[in-house]
Length: 632
Image 1 (cartoon, rainbow, N blue to C red):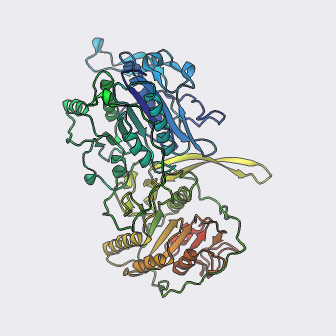
Image 2: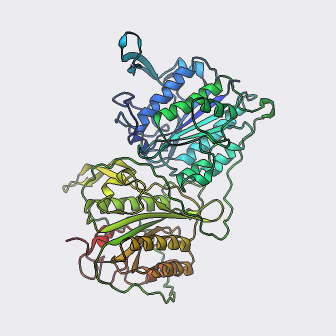
Image 3: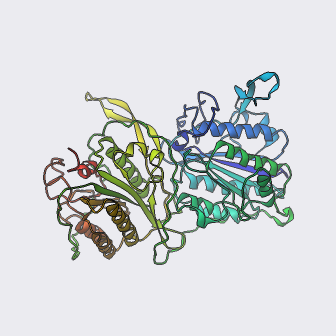
């Protein structure tokens, strides 16, 4: 152990890091070098080639910091990347290569002698440089190689941090406070990391946790070192605030000396950070290693293992939390491929022969038909809950539902009508047992808006992910087709919330939209993506909240229940729905628009009496149904 302390870099290597870093000036090589595999025995992850990507520009900043700091500090350093591997499992690994491969904690003087390679880079000089030169060729050692693939396995990454901090503390007496620097672009895809981060904050070594979310939009002002959670937008920024350490006094003094406005209770959080903000934060870490104690008495610190994760306590009855608009990351929209072919249900589970029909009596009735005039509203309502939000969320119902929501919006964007207005709402339980309901703002050119038309969806995605899909070539072979997938919402899972509270929020949202249009609207459709599991009475109470609006509201449901259940697609009766809440959902689900008139047709699947409901199956006619009556 070095008495100069340690720094642990935790780096997002998910596909989100392949998106542009909207900052000024080029940096990094024109081509990304190949990176090592995430874990032994797995295929190497794809590497970004965009020289302006977050991955490449961040790698440049971290490599420059290592080169600069290693010349005057003996601190230990660990470099950890996280993503998912080719099999979709969490992949967390040390990112050292060459002679350092396989190691975790390494003294900086040792690191400086073992780069993966040394590149020739061009460095810009200030206008007052001797001789009037504007650029200079320099040797640039590389330790961190940029890599992007899969999803952001943050929970696995933070769990590894806890293990490494305990390992480092066990080496001997702690000198300066450890520093953990998390650099990322995406929310956690494998579960809520709040609990393990809280345990890290309580570790006897008293680590300084610095959270740096990389910039996604030039139009959104960076949030730097906030001091009060109540002034932050609901959602990602509030979540991140709870995962940071208060700034040490010497860090605050250093920032104030650089004209950074700070309040006394400022924390180590940067959201939508520019490259200059990242560099400034890394300078604080460098200064800390040079000798600042950051208010910690080393003699009062003893090594101790991090407490194991325990199941979350059951939440009390939910109540509605205050709703505050959330800031969302933003990237430009790219071209999307033609609408995908019809998909047959692929998530079917083994039917249970013992399933029997359960009849649920209800006075709720579907809305009566109205004259088709004016625009239509569509609210995409996403249930963000998991039974265990602190457990793995990879390939969970929530993860699959979020993917289906994004895919559905992508399909809507391809054949716009201009008459379909779309909003996104997510809900789940928060740490206090309340229901956190959020109207998710759109991104890119539609930043900050609650409602956009389907024509606006082409410029409202957070980012575009490029993948390759294999399809039959018609003669027994396969062809690879590149696909660009727009990502509109990227939420983080949490505990169960109240369906009724979510319905109340959606009701207010639709009512406000209707008033904006002078009441001259045709109807609204609420498309609910959920893992189900609510009491049947909550299903009917939520439907009652929506029915109370002054315009007809039709409910569609895309359900992936936790309990095993056979696939059901556009049913005409409750027969075959073996869970009580699914019986209730059938009753409140509206007729599938376009089925009765033949405008939406799937032979043998969609019939005139079909309802807008799928269970463990794709809702492959959703885009077509929402457009019915809106196209000329």
